[in-house]
Structure formats: C-alpha cells, structure tokens
Image (cartoon, rainbow over all chains, first blue to last red; front, side, top):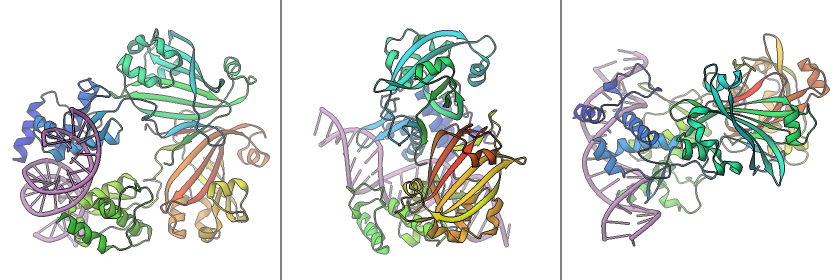
Length: 262
Length: 262
DNA sequence: GAGTGGTCTAGACCACCCA
DNA sequence: GGGTGGTCTAGACCACTCA
C-alpha cells in the first residue's frame, strides 16, 4: 500500500526530478513522499501556477491531488513555510508570500543607526543603464566575458540626508523590463519589482562586510571627504532557481549593520 | 479525553509556566501540549538533567513520562532541533548538542579572507582580569553601576599572523571560574568553556558591524599604523535563560565578515 | 455554518546503529 | 535482533475566518 501510493505519486508527475539539493545517494523511487511533495509545490510556485499573494488549494484538496495523506502535505508545507515562501493563516488558507517591506525574507541583517535605532530609508535612483559587466560583476553573477548587466546607482536617504550609496548590478537578460520601470525611481523594496516585473524571486542572499574608502563619486553623494573610511556591504542574491540575480554594493559612513538576535 | 490528558500533563508538571515568548492571550490550560512538552525538555536541558553531549530518553519513553503521544514529543523536539539545541541521530538517539567548532550554533556570520577563503584562527590570550564594567559593558550586559566584569584581551592569528584583536567582557559573577582556566589560553571555541566550566550555554547572539580606527594598543597588536580603518564586530551573546552573558568586540584590518547563503 | 488550518492520537512499517 | 529515529496514514476534535 505504501509502495502503491508512492508509485502513484511518482506517475502523477512524470516530470518529477530530485531537487538540486537532494543527495545523489537517494534513488528516485525511495525519496520520501513529503520531499517529493515539497518539490512539486516549490515547482508550482516557481513556475507561477500559484502567484505571489495567491492562495494554494486546501490541504485535503492537495492531498487528493497528490495521492498522499494530509500529514504528508503538511510536512511538505512546513518546510516551505520555514524558508519563508509560504505563509499559513488559520481559517483562511496558505498563501505564497510576496516580497514586501512588512514580511521581508531578509530578517537577519539590516542597517541601523549607531545608537541602534532602525534605519528607515527612501531610495533615489541616480542612474540606470546597461553596461558591460566588469570582472567583479561576472564573478558575483556567474556571467561569461562580454556579458551585459543593468546597473542601478542610487542613494538611500533618511530625512533627506543620503546615508547609503548603492550600486546594483543585474543580469541584463531577465531584467530588461526594469530599465524603463517608472515606479523604480524611489522604491525601497526593489525585490518586489524583480518579482512583479521580471518574474525573478529572491530566495536567499549572502552578505560580505568589509571596510572601504570613499571614492570621489561616493564621497560626493554621501557628503563626506574622499578617502573617508566606509562600511561596504556586498550582497549576492540568488533566485528560487538557484541562479545569482543581483550583485549589490552598499557604502555607508555612519550606519552600522546588524544581525537579528540570531 | 483530550481534555483529560491535557489536564494530566499540566498536573504532572505543576511548575509549568508559559514561556516569555508565549502570547499572553493563551491561557495556561489551553497552551498546546507540544509547547508544554518543548518547554519541559528545554528546562531539563537548561538545568542540566541532560548534559551537553548526553542523550535524551527515547521517544516512546518520553511520551510515557509526559503522558502524551509520540507525535507530540516529536513536534516538541523538532522545535529544539531547529534551534540547534538537539541533534537527532537515526538509530542512536537524540543528543543535547555541545558547542564545538564542528557544529557551531553560529552558522550565520563568520570571518573570511578578502578572497572568500575561510579564516582558521588560533587564539592567544593577552590578559585576563576583573575590572569595573564601563558604560558600554553595562549597557550590553544589562549590569548596574559598579558591576564587575571579567575582561579577556586576545588575538586570533592564522599562520602566526594576528588578524583579529578581541576584547571579551563577561559578568564577573558566573564566570569567575574562567579566570584561572588553564585551557583558555589558546582555545578558539571559548563557548565550550562557558558551558563546561561556568554552566552558561550561549543560545543566540546579535552582531553589529561598524568601522573604527585602530587605537594604539590595537594597532600594535595587529601590526598596523594607529588610526588605520578597521572593521569592528560587536557581539552580545545571550544564554538559554535569556540573559546577556558576553559582550565581545573584534577588530580586524584585513578580514571580511560574511553571512552564509541565508 | 461551511471551510480552513491547528492539535493530538494510535499504529503501521521502514532504515539505521550497535551489541 | 532489539532499540532507535524516520515516514506515512487515518481520523478525531478544536479554533479561526468569512459569508
């Protein structure tokens, strides 16, 4: 019986494939059902069957569809909830989490003032244009020589005072739509745009923090002397599909960078 | 029946109290069993009933002891596993995770070289002594005026080259045993000592990253000119009981600080 | 009141570790 | 071979949301 339903679930989705993270040692047939279910759900989130902000079918419905028990569906969902991709609401349903300032998927690291006050910035785009990716861009984004990137230069200000100078490099290909995007001018939460306009959902990011000295352009934007020691936060953001889609450098003179309590 | 076993579980542990994180809206009687079980397990870990490195009773045994089903025990454990407090080993049992370099609870943030190579340091204690806590120490550790702290000054070197200068302030009270600890001289993973010698287990930590300039003592230790721009990582570590127990400042000239791929 | 997710149980079978 | 955790199921009842 257990084997029968397992085979049924497999045959119901002939395109089923082990996720990249799955150990190669687990043969397809013996992969736990809840992992297969999780990957199926993930695939449907990635391919847009269920849009960000939309609701999944109910648990009993999904259990019927996949031919597994509700408990197995729940275990698959728990995993995706833990990743911040789904949000369950008692009595309402299970929602694909959209990026938004409220429920940001990046709860671990953020800029704060020196005294610990939260930093509440407004963005202002200085320039946006396509350019040949430099060596750093190519390394961070995994691009080949001659690849093009969309480069956004912007400041992030609080009370009209620019506190962060930011350079964002995006692979030109999937992000072409962003170039003429009118709303992008002042939008803080740019990941919403990646998702809505370019179909790219940021899944994870790695930050590397270092010191740097203010180049002339940065010094001018931040209103500090050239050569001033700055904090430089470099971020590589990765899509749900596992490809690097954003290389962002943020320079700041006065702000600190902080992890949540674990 | 559900109410009966719930009441039974409550009466079995009269000292049960909602965790600080529990919403005040949940009356004691209706607190989910698995949360009550989780807190009971946590309490036994904190009070040393099960020592770091030791094994818990088996699931059926715990289920019997607490008067709940195995599924409820499993759900309670999953929570603690997620916090990195427990580690389950198929066929062997469930272990209280000890701090160690291998399975560090701080997987989010670490020092790396500028090229991304991992930093593999050796510690060297420069001095260890009790002092009156300064304002920063008191703020970070929540101490009153006149409180004493144990201050460790140390360097962390790779291939004999000092890369990090570190000041660690600990409340004098629970950490008195550490002062004369012989093994502390060169121990990188000092959290193991906190646990083994002082009974203090670090549960979470918050890092704040800023720039600073090298004070003379730091410049000398790191072999750089005074005034050199440095990266300063300030950490407040919190015990299982929720009290701040370590205030650590780490200065480095060359290293970067990096979050895992989230 | 219908439908959703949340909690809890009981029991089956499997996979792993170790004596 | 005995004990451990891992997976999976089926069903009960509760709590919440919304019409």
